[in-house]
Structure formats: structure tokens, C-alpha cells
Length: 406
Image (cartoon, rainbow, N blue to C red; front, side, top):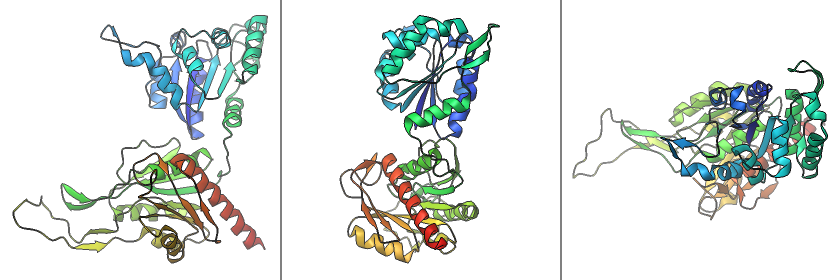
């Protein structure tokens, strides 16, 4: 989930740096927008280093002395990718702008442009907080659905005592969870996820692979982290960024993926095998580049080891999820895989269907469960599919625990 953290100009701006880390630990991806006044208290470089992303400070960025036209609509792009706008600290000035619809900088313009929920955590002098104008602005924002995290009382930077201190991190995090309805139902679980393709070398410059982008597996890893799990992501070669709060292990071949899975399997309580591992690999990889000639060549292929089946033989108490990407007879093949591989859940899909398959943002799947339930899903984003998979994992886990207790 993508959170945009707005930082406005007050002494409490330094606390926003700690908040970035806390949000990342919760599994959120964080992008920071700073007002010019905020830059007087904390340098943008601090937030860039913590978030790993560019920090936006101006509505119209300048390059080589000339306005960068791309930045003129950047607030729209940020608004569209934001799942939640969190402003902490929120000064009296930024609250007044939000309340009155003034948009004279990036943050205030972003507020008007986004349809995402908004959480603000005010911080200011006690007299400023108690002023009727500020309280009127707070009430205006509440009526519009903005979630207000009330400031704490105590000793303030100005030397006065009273309400106005930025709320504690736990209060702000709790507000974020409430607003986005984040479920922490995987806390205490360790989820092992495989994702992406593998590459099986023909020679030093060529390899056998497939069309997998890794998006589905990465969506599962991200969703599991957001729901509180410790997540280990074993990834084949992809161009995707590592989701927040996820430990990533990079591999290239099927054998390397097997080794990584075996190293981390003992720690896992749930294992989700979303990687598209090559079914075959060359029997031998040429030591040098195979030269082109007029003659045809033959390459002997041998079966790759079946990582899902190998892991499932040692499943113990773990819940095992596999994927079946098919071009025909999806249900029949998925149910057979469920039985043969000793899995608890198989995610089956027809990769030739519109909106499904490799390297697209959506998927159309059916969840085939060990207890006989088949759950067809409509076309959903891969993020939504990931959540539904985890819902089914938890349902099965609860069912198995109940059976064991009985």
C-alpha cells in the first residue's frame, strides 16, 4: 500500500523521519512531500535516504533555470498512486489551506487532487491550536471525512505547556490502520514466497526462460507484509522493486531457487510458490558462446526439480500454496496438481484469457482448496487477487486447526 507522507514546517518535522521507518515496518511504501517551510527544519535528503524515493518539495521543479513541464502535472500522478495521504506534522497554515481549498504549493494541491483518504496529525503552539480559526478549520476537515489525530498535551518547543505536541507514533499508526482497514491477521506468521521466472543457461549469453514478470508473487509478498507477516521473498530475475518490510533473496536458476527455499523453509509457517520455474533446463551449459552456423543444433533438456513437490514432502504443519498457469483444462489440471503435489491450495488460471496471465496488472483465477472448495474470482488486480489468496489461506488454516483440536 502506497502512503504519501506530507511534512509541513514545524519543529516536529524531525519526528516525521522516524515515522517513515515506522510506516515501512508496517509494510507500507512511503513517498514524502515537503513544504518549503519544512525544508528549513529537516533536509529533503534525510527523507530521500529513508524512503528510497525522490522527495517532492515544489509544485514546479526547475532544471537548468527553466521550468520542468513534467512537474506541472506531477501532483496528479502522485494523487493517483496514493492509497492514503498522511500529513504529520500538520501546521496551522496547512490545515487552513486544506480547509479553505487553497492550493499554492505541492502538498495543498495534492490534497485537492487526491481521492484517497486523508489523515492529519496537527502540531503547533497551544494558543494556535486553541484559536477559533484553527478549531473551525479542524471541524471543516472532519465534516469532509478527514481523520484528525489530535495532538498530545505536554511541554512544547516554545516553552509553553498544553495541547499541541505531535501525537505519538502509535496513535498515528493506529489511525492509518483504521482508515485503510489494514488487517494484521498474519502477525506471528512467517510467509515464504517464490516469484518471477528462472533462467536456465544455454551458454554464457543465452538462456531458457518464460514470460513471467513476477508481479503476482510480489503482490502476495507485499500483501502478506501489510497484514503483519514476516515475509521472505525468493525472487527470480525481475525489474520489480522489493516491497516494503520484505526480505528478498535473489536467485537466477531453478536449482538456485530450490537451494534458497530449502534454506528458509524451516522458518516458514506458510509457503506460497508463485514463481514460474522453468520445467526443463539444458543438460549441459556450453562454456563459451555457441557460434552461429548454417547447421542446425540440438539441445538436450532435462527436467528441473519440482520445488513445490519437494517442499510439500516436508510440509509438516505448514500450509502450502501452489500456482497452476494453464492454457486448457484449468480445473482438471489444477485439481490434479493439488493432489499430486500435496498442496493445500492451488491458484489456477488460464493464461490465454483476457486480463489474465503474464506481465499484466490483472488476473482471473480460481482457488482450488484441499477441503474441496473451488472459488472462482472475477477479473481483479493482482493486488486484489493476493488479498483473496491470503483470505483463503487463513480460512484453511483456521479449519485445519479446528479439525486438529477436535
